[in-house]
Length: 111
Image (cartoon, rainbow, N blue to C red):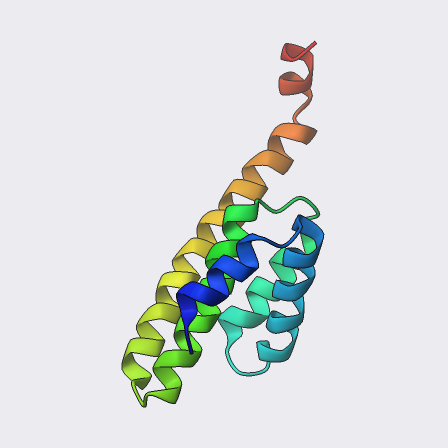
């Protein structure tokens, strides 16, 4: 698998196609590891997830698949753990933004 070529191909796609492709990959993988299931839910729930996050997830999935096919299960687990850290940061950021949106004092300050 030539990951750099696949990344270049992915970069050239429109945002909607990138998001749909990542969602489809995560939908298929959600049964293999809880992190993929959590990513699937997160990407599904956030309508305007940043493109760099989509790139990160796409690349991460490719790298995990490559490690597994090479028989490097521990390296694959390490990559999944790193993806979990990113997922937690995304969720924390999303919660902070939702809290800010519903905080009446923040809304008044913005007026």
